[in-house]
Length: 380
Image (cartoon, helix red, strand yellow):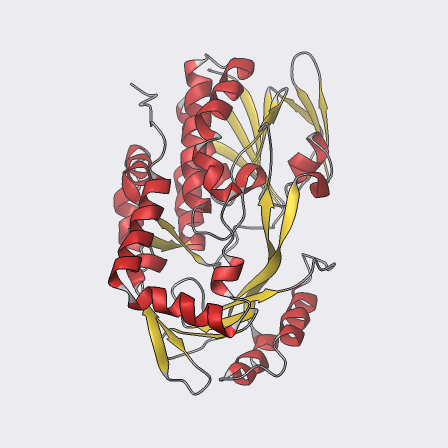
């Protein structure tokens, strides 16, 4: 694979993870990211089970991820008076190892910045495949040709849109939105529900975390002020201390709003272009996205190595190895779990965390999903 040129779109988790392996296998890697710099903050992400742990270990970052881990927090489910109804234990929300997404992205960037070229503040505008490569134009950078192009640019993938077709053909809105922010809330981690909406503060996943039911909305994904207004309007009149929380939203840092959606791709590749992570099999907010991205990068790079860089063989092998493993995101939907549609459903959800047996079953189920793949030792 020495000298194979690869363009990766997206510098969050999946992109730099793939850059690590491809550079190690001799490829010349370029990563382009629309944001002007690495995105800090974001929700905490977690890893669980032997498969995730093995990939982290083979990347040589397991110890450093553990050093930067959050430690996991119990989250108290409260009613409108602040009385505790149940507790979500940190082992459920945080998996085996939990780390802030921004910290993980920074770690991956540190491990790859000297082996891969990073272009921030730019985006792909066209992809034209030829017999020998993919001709790429950018918003700012001069056009270039690459042997392969990888879309690791999230659920709203630009590469998928350019190579496969409009987002509406591949992404299904699952009826909920979520928002993350840091409003400087102090105190224990608490989560409050009313039918179809949830607000959590001081929690393990983000300083403030909102989930609410909604029809599909039209808004500018790069306008945080517009996003703040959408969330504030969605929570008007809610009980508990919600008024205090939304009053702090205008000054919030790193505010982020997105839909809970499902990406459905029968094939992850088209010619010399392939999709990885949420662009191919996310984002249901079910807690598997980061693990899928990490393992997917390992498998995709490994199959390219095994095939000697033959993308036709490698992409098909990646598809066959990963389609079943990624099936959890074709079934899951965290929206109704985090923001149940009725008071009865809220009580039933809370009861599950009061039952030791139910908690053990849920933990076992998530570990099983995270381990349902035969992991090859490609380097060997």
